[in-house]
Image (cartoon, rainbow, N blue to C red; front, side, top):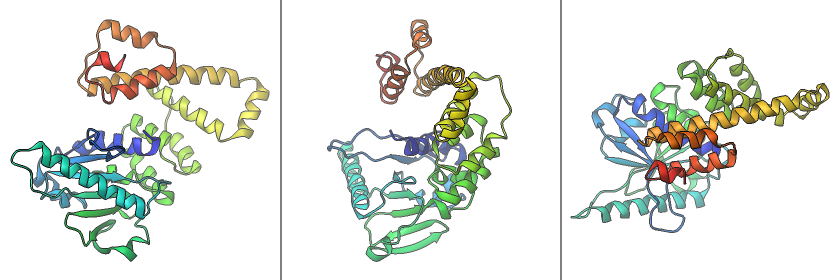
Length: 309
């Protein structure tokens, strides 16, 4: 999964139930039985009345039990081809839902596209109705079709999952606003994944004093490596001073610690309880590629044993 949309999906998964007070939940759907046709995810509406008082687009989900969501992050293609592919994935999910029930489900699967901007070309091929800042109804359409322009959305706690799709200056504004409102671990993940300006990233990093939590320190070391990779002049200076080797060793150790912690957290969220032997297997693994492979497997595995295969 790509780093940008991966972070957005993780935020939807972690934040949605909290910001909607349990009124909606994020689910990663199984792959549809069509080659290369799989949506980013869908929102399952659990308590419609809880969505009604929230900022748009949440109230638009009240009349549905599920909404298909497509996320387009900064740098992703947002053209007519991608629009058609999104509607194809929506139709595939709709067919899947029809086949799942007897008698067949007769509804229409809604589609929400989340992107930084409303593309100018969309005005030329569709009729757009502005429902609220950043929320547009796309027509004509037999199903609910919303385009959510994250850069135009207000900074509201319940909109954090959508706001992760911001870009440019709007992303910087979101990052500075959200940093004191979320826990340190989430903020460091945001710094790791979202392409905000270097100045904003540095300003936010200065807010964090050193802590004893090895997971948080591991994430900070990853960010330090990223900054070094993007600052060759600083890296050259460190080489001259003879300290880069020690930094790289510390960063590698931190990456292993972080990967192990993320793996354990993911297994716990999937409802898996690793045995003592599995815990020892995770601690003994010193290959970052192996830990990353286990992380990927844990996202879809049916058991802890399968995840660590």
